[in-house]
Length: 117
Image 1 (cartoon, one colour):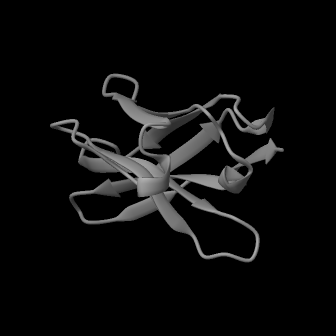
Image 2 (cartoon, one colour):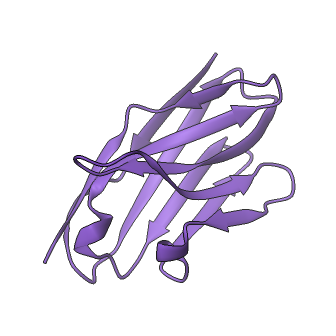
Image 3 (tube, one colour):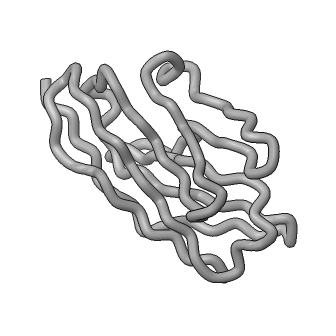
């Protein structure tokens, strides 16, 4: 089992920035990938950004490219999402995701991000 704990959500005005953090614990030795998904009210959950654990390759949702940056800390088994130039449409609950080589997939409890116009 892997446990994921997110932090860093909150309320920010459009154009502002937030940094989300996610710390993993438990069976993390075979982590393959970590990333972020989000779910806005009335919408399906969508991929936002991800990073491979070994090579550090990153992937982004087209609408966040150039504004969001995903990074990792292998020593702390943590993944981060720096969000700049936030827009009201970025408002959602953001979930940390971990995929292992087992393979298994885990999600955190989610953190609310609200962007006011």
